[in-house]
Image 1: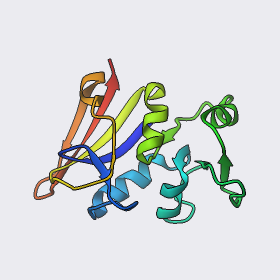
Image 2: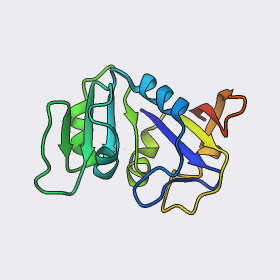
Image 3: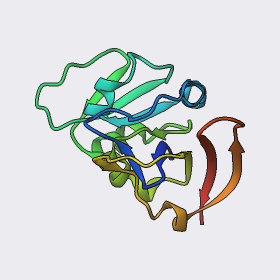
Length: 156
């Protein structure tokens, strides 16, 4: 599994259920990366992202009893249910957040793609900060005149 996330200098990924920055280049890269692959996200993240994305299928973790199904999304009540749905897949599976979902699937992530945003945020959800110790960067993409860089890292 691959975690894909944008984090501030202090590890925050959101505030009040929204992303506290607007980085169109990063959004484009994000959509291209997950294209045609299954993704996992929480309900709040699902409700914030544009409909459908370009992924193969979206697995939404939710505690809501009657969450509406869509042809491109399946509501799941547990990590185990998601894993059952994905047990036969040979595709890359992307974890897209939010904070609780990253924590839940952190040990299953073999790779993380982290957009490190050069700003501090008074946020309310974080990506596990231990990623800098648990994963080794192998590609770092810097953008001139952009307040971020993208780091591809594999688990040690």
